[in-house]
Amino acid sequence: MGRIAIEGMKFYAHHGYYHDERRVGNHFEADVYVDTDFQLAAETDDLSATVNYEVIWELTRDVMQGSSYLIEHVALQLYRSIRARFPKITYCKVRITKLNPPIKGEVARTYVELDTENPV
Image 1 (spheres, rainbow, N blue to C red):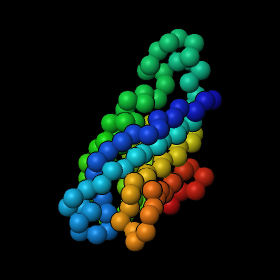
Image 2: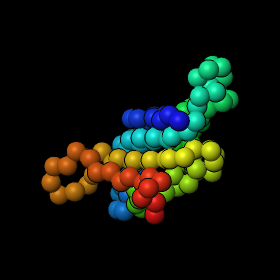
Image 3: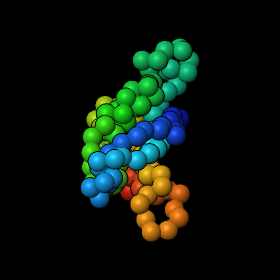
Image 4: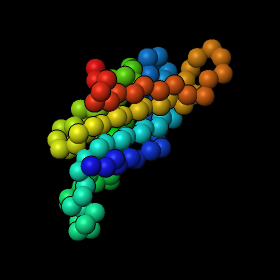
């Protein structure tokens, strides 16, 4: 069993509670962590025997291309998409980060996380 991580995926997307956030957009980051048995892939050097992190990036891109009011909703969509595409993973964690959120005050980022141990 091992962990595969893809961190710091960067997107410009149109998620946000306020109309201007959805119209203008903002910078987001996504991080995904999955646990899976990749012993066969490690021994055989065969990509088909593991979770392809390029596919995780594509799933993330597809979710980020939409428009949601809440990053909680974005995180749940991505979590469900990954779990559906890779049913053999034993653990999944998704973090969606909004950079420079429109809050009255200086805030670098906000984020939400979902994982197998704390699902919605």
